[in-house]
Image 1 (cartoon, rainbow, N blue to C red):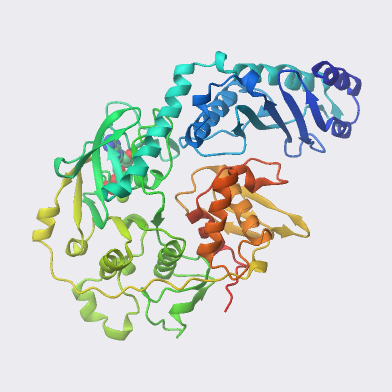
Image 2: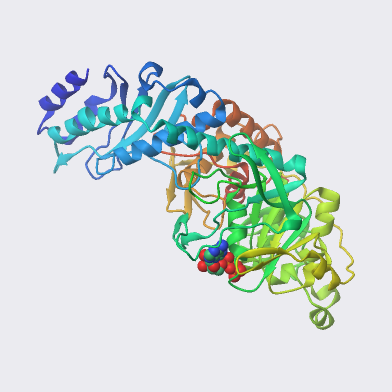
Length: 549
Ligand code: ADP
Ligand code: MG
């Protein structure tokens, strides 16, 4: 068939570009099957889409590389990264990950068969077919790539070490609840990044590797690395303090990313956070649809009901309150908060301000009065960066000070400075039921799911602002969120009077059973697996969303 495709292409040489469409369908290359799924209509349109199935007998992966779901995801990720490197300079493209190892549609393993999805810019001379160019991509570079992915062609030790690393991180994360921890940061971890725009590790002599303070050091045993020691952040309220520029936000960012697994050499391979941890921030201007923020906001000057709060343009404090309520509604039990991105008036209120603005004039109940009841009565832990105010000394279970990028346990010293504080009461937000029809992926009759950079998810007629969702880390996840929203509405998961949380449970069940590709039926592009918290966050920011009375 490879010869048949070559011959076919040669026959098409110089014909009008549209004739490429006749190539659609399956081509048996012997070693693998090529499927030409979607053909672009002109050279300037988005790339055409193809898929490749390499049978187990050719891929020749040993069973240990793919038998467990964790190793299957890791090995597929490893192969996709290799394919990406092999295709450098080609017109063939494969979607591969950054520093995180996330299940994605471009590379999967099915009982030892390797399934790949790629894009290709089919070459043209103007609007005529460039047959030689197409032949070199499809009949030479593609088979060479498949060849390079065969197990005997790999650096096998490297491939196995990659899967071992991921398996260790997964084991570490699974260990957290039974140890009463919300996160773990191994000694020797490298947390700072190369730059604000590069997620690779910082290198050079300026890097201060992480070392846990003795009093908070715990040791865990991992399947491959054996015993590893590091900082265990206990459940409850943990405060991270320290002077400006001493590494507080860097530590918190590492914890945000610790819900994902990292590639070997990243520096954060052994940073693990509870999978339901959510970064909370203020997000002025976001839409809020009937969220219960009454635990944080009593009465607004507008007289609107804060138990059923709606706004097309939320303030810093009300947006942050909504972000907390919605994360808890979606099932989070760990909140990550950084003073750099919070609304100060929702975080603290000092005595002088209370004396000036008191009683009913201040609708906000500061988080400092709610963070303890959140943990005691609702089992929600908080890790909070706060260098600017000592108010949280009163409520913190543990205080870690960063000094020159080194953490110290200063809990006792902070406790000596703490004052009595009367907690407010926290009640869990009401569970909402969504009007399924208000979540519509179809713009003028056709499904439209697209992303713009890391900022915007276009979903049907709506643009959803996702730029502040710190734990959406991969471009493919943004598309994945759009596909998940489509599934929630079109497959009826939001129907049958299900609450938002119940709909997310149903979605999680399906993705656990069927894997990432369950999201993409009929969808030709690239996508990766998002978490339920980012799916919920996008749903909550959808400007057409309607919650049923
Ligand atoms: P803070 O939040 O305390 O003000 P940041 O976390 O923003 O501080 O860190 C300030 C700078 O220090 C950043 O440029 C960051 O990359 C760098 N940095 C953080 N941690 C380390 C480290 N362990 N080693 C070297 N540089 C670091
Ligand atoms: Mg900071």
